[in-house]
Amino acid sequence: MKTKLITTIILAIAYAGFAGEPAKAKNPTPIQPKVAENPLSFYDGKLIFDFQERLRFEIRENNFDFNDGVNALTDDSWLLQRARLGMKITPNDWFSFYVQGQSSFELDSDRPNTPGVLGAEGDDPIDLYQAYIQLGKKNFNVTIGRQLLTFADERLVGTFDWNNLGRSFDAVKLHYNTDTWSLDAFASSVVVPNKDEFNQSDLFDGNDTGRNQIFSGLYYSDKTLLPNQSTDLYVFHLHEEYAVGNTNFFTFGTRMKADPTKLQGFDYETEMAFQTGEVKGGDLTAFAGHWGAGYNWLKHSMKPRIGIEYNYGSGDSDATDGDVGTFQNLFPTNHKFYGFMDIFSWQNIHTPALSFSFQPSKTVKVRLDYHAFWLADTNDAWYRANGVSKVRPIKGSASSFVGTELDATVSWKATKNLSFVAGYSHFFSGDYAAATGAADDADFGYVQATLEF
Image (cartoon, rainbow, N blue to C red; front, top):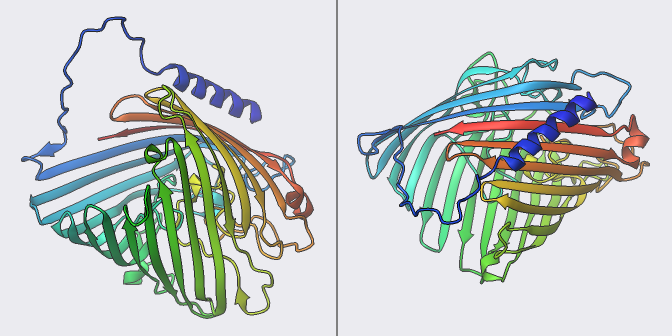
């Protein structure tokens, strides 16, 4: 299995790295660029189709049990296939309608064919991913229907596009923007994947969750509030109903991100969020933070960047006292931030990380990331990227050091419509894993191709 993994990734990275731009002639003849027309646009842009086909081959070993001695269902390789077809109708400048269907499959996998079980992404042959109407102009509009909600870097609210099913919401969103600031207000309910039936949210109570979920919020972003950076302020509210008690809590947060072109190549970013309210009847008080900084060689042909960051998400010190200290990660795209193996989320963690990236050509980018993981509180669980699944039983007396992860990725923009990415990740198990069960290292590799118009 490991030999197959390493061979696959080496070949993919080598191909992507050396199949970049062709060598240029010493004195090339100048050619005036032509603006390519969208082949899927009709009637002067009043009718536009979009299409995406994505294939990703994955191979994983020990990602769930960290045990070389067991050939688990999750120690396998599979092919993830996803197709999306959308249509947008814009009869005038104040009204538009958009609909997008999706078909996704997990092929040749031993994992259960049910989304979310043992990390499976499963099959959902035909479903509705988006369907909304938008009323108003570009700077002031309301969007009603099934849509995507993304804010900032998606640490709390995003589309989770790495996942084969993605994430969408049944929502109403009001948007207003000027040249320097914008404001979004929304009320929504997340769509729940169902491989056998039409995907629904709690809004129509058709997914049998019984939660009556309402997720709402305000998000303000300003480009000039503080110099050389964008500054965001937000508040989110989540309501859910359970037999053990209701969930009602607020998330108050801020995000700041610098522009390296205004700081001679230096950059920094931070996002901090505080939560208060109740989770399933327990009193919630929780906090999470992200702090990072880096330097970009802007004038270098390969655009190298080196960065350092630290992430923290609070945990719960006592599961029996009626108080909840675990930060609630809401609806994030965690794949971007806490290791590409997706075995951590923004809760109950201390995570310092280093990163380095460069572009050997204009179309190829190489990136290396190194993470170290500690639990914030060993009386709380080690949570996977979905923020719900627990990796190991809680053991308060164990060491808090879980392990480290090394990620290597190569991306290649082959053409305007075709792109590739290949990656390899290795997890080095630490003391906490050894104290709570098997503690063998884990591996993850993938090659992905995306065609879109």
